[in-house]
Length: 431
Image 1: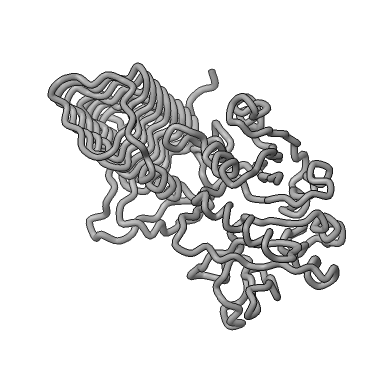
Image 2 (image 1 turned 180 degrees about the vertical axis):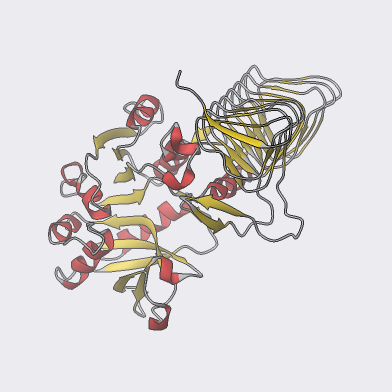
């Protein structure tokens, strides 16, 4: 069976992480998000994948190439030049699919690979035109809600319904199987009030106008995340680390304490006095220690340096240095970041309330008791910087010594405190 992955979006809600890479290429436990997905599809019997690309597409193409030699699955590409909705994006796959059945999914999803196997099996054992995966949600007014009949066939699809309608709480989870007649439904789809061609409208047309039969598959007790918000990367990281197999390819000096499952990549060194509690993933050519403390659910990518510092439940991307008396907890540190000695990240409020983070100018409740910082690529801090929980530091920014950060720092910024303790904010001059 073929698969189509929609991967053209800009991932604006994940800024500054996606400032330097498309969302599907964010590394998690040694591989880009998209690679974890394609490997799962491969295990489910998919042998040819079309990736519909757009934003920073060369990062995807350069990494996977034709797929055959890099991942063992044939990969094709098509560039989405206009962004007119999910139905419009899906229609780019029409010539690729031809008359075949195919799996369709959004490229920012991480899901237990069993879901792929289950939806394909459900499609194959019934005479269906489609299968849609579903998730139970607490706030149906924020989703496309699917109403099923007693045989789990889709009756109605309603975008962001008023709660008073009582249409249930089963939301579109972004993984589908279809016959090629879905493209006939897309051709009949009109623009919504948002001015977009909505894929949910196309599915309703398939049911109502073309007498199509779509079954719902409810994801129960299996991991699923659409990774639309920074802290969802931490959830995905935890899910992947819980499946980690132990592997030691680097060097571990004497007087190192290791418990739990860890992966240590080639040419990496763990110096004496270091304690590591797994599950943890440490990439290639990375130096940890001496006297570092790496706590569970930490992913430290390639070419990093972690010295006499503590890291807990965090994602640290390549070429980053956390060398001297630093604390990083529940955080995402992008590539080529340098933390000055004594830089500390707060990850807990005094009142123990959940932490909010600004997403596209709006405060969003993470519903997490612990959440640290997101630091964009190519940024650095001076000595003894303190960063409050839930804050973001944009890419290419510099935080001066002894500075207290209690607000988001825009990209390309210089923040420092003057001799009177006043916070000075400047835009860095163009290089």
